[in-house]
Length: 180
Image (cartoon, rainbow, N blue to C red; front, side, top):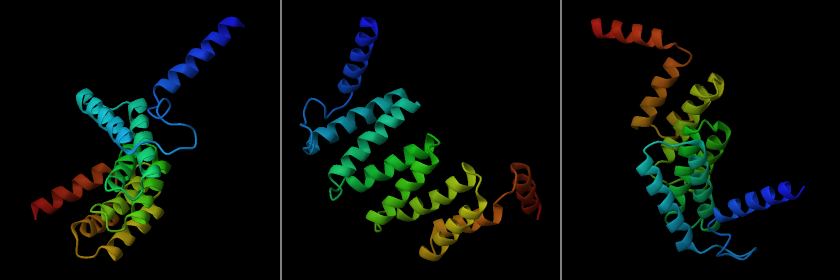
């Protein structure tokens, strides 16, 4: 029993040491903006130096980005951090989370430089991760309607044309076009 208590205490201590807010922020108070940014920069630097992302690192990055967004949604960094959280979630195959976060980018920051791509990536996730062609087509159609005459609208049209096709079918079609 004493060993179990010691293990639980060590686990709680280890978890609290990883939280940048645990030692600097009182419960119910807003964490310091610069502290959050510094923590994000450290995590990003570690991610760049590792050159690969594991699930734990990715989850930690997403949490750090969302902590900033949730505390400082009107800050200049907030929209980019929210987008990055969505992007990492997508790359970790956290499909539902990624879709939700990309929706939030569009909802909170409709003028964001990547708002059109945030919508497109929702369709991409439905198509490639969730294998839900119906929702993928709906999203791609929204991209075309909301962002006509853009490269991403062209990409959405191509995605609709290729929905459900295997890699072999796509290669065959590409080869046929090249012969002509």
